[in-house]
Image (cartoon, rainbow, N blue to C red; front, side, top):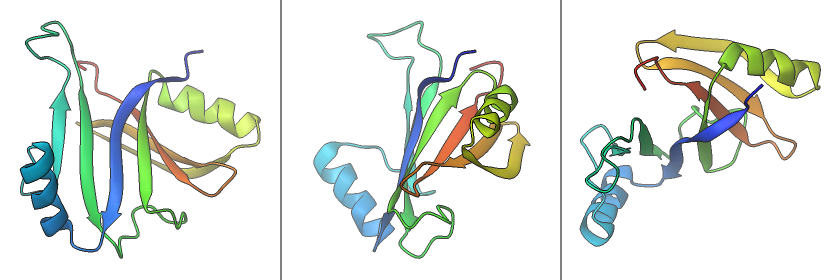
Length: 128
């Protein structure tokens, strides 16, 4: 079974998400949107057949989205078969959250690594 196939997103906490987003926009050219992040499409002039997106997003420092982790970041990894992988990880003794979200954006599940970092696993919709 394939496990991780790529990075779907990088999320991190910021004391002042709007100000930090403006800094990234000004100094690194990241097109930070009003929702607090940016999407890097894989389909570019250098890669015209690329399909997919990597998300980059800032969260308020007090967010609970990364809980139970206390880390200031969370990485989203792309996977091919979320439910199959979560079952395999449970069988291997990995701490897997019971909650799975399914929407038009794909399927999302979460695990905790041995150092307490929350990891988001994402199975993109079929079109991606």
